[in-house]
Image (cartoon, helix red, strand yellow):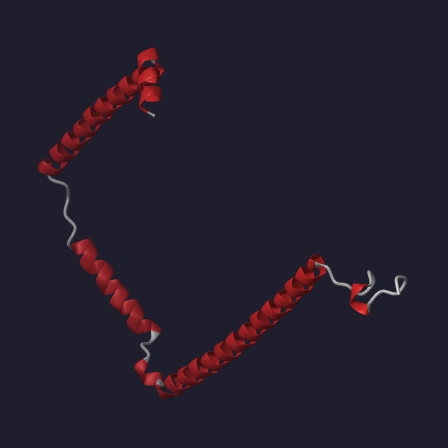
Length: 140
């Protein structure tokens, strides 16, 4: 019968390659979202367990600390005063060698600065010169 077509040959039922690909893609995306959600939930449960464990450890340690073990503010204040007194007591007035060393250090810094500036100026001149630009272009 020429007017009758088979069921799988009809245009309304046949699935093309694009529809199959789209369906498979949607399926893969749904599976990926489910896996991500499962991993997030699992990690959330692990973090909650670790937090509860840490809290229990902290409570156990804090219950063992007695008031007598913590230093008072007066003890801390006395120790800081002793430390400051010791530090200030060990300081000395600057000697002539200290002044000479500072002057030599400043002189060396100024000389180094001038030398570095001249090197920078030379490098700038080489970059701006026509030969310097051509050399760089020919090497790259």
